[in-house]
Image (tube, rainbow, N blue to C red; front, side, top):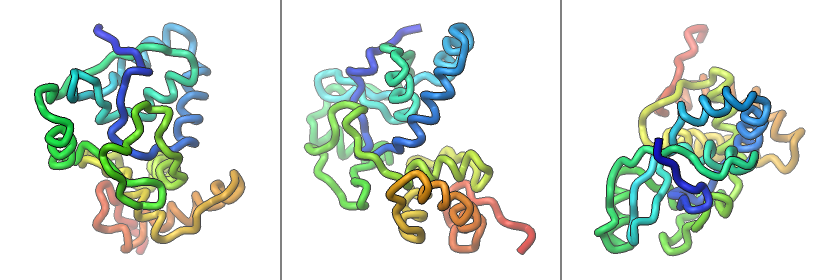
Length: 198
């Protein structure tokens, strides 16, 4: 299986969830060598090629970051499209038209494509990206194939809940976020699970 150096991968999102990355890294670190190798093979990083043939990640950013944290230098990948013949402007607009880029910072402000991070490790932390992942893993909503679905959930939680400033505040948000995810306010979001007890 072909692999790429994680340090050479370019992100297509301005933010990631630091807590989500730490949790994934801990889970990977706990695996025996053979099981880790199998886990890595089961989740290849999904990429497109951009200008100058540079690889851009369009799925599994957090997986790549977590593996880098535990010292895994290279990862298997799946190439979805080759856009290396496009100009930089054409490339980013093409990604945006396919919902393969998220050019918004943790405060939900749009950033210029030229200001997107060049390395996965340079993405900003967004507490609500982690919260969305934790809520999904706790059964608050279903995983969806809709592009940027987790970002939509993160934006939803950001709009309804206070920003945590420490571990205790983050942990205290999980139950309110789970209740919010099952409420009618979330009905239009991808992966919404209707609460039949209502």
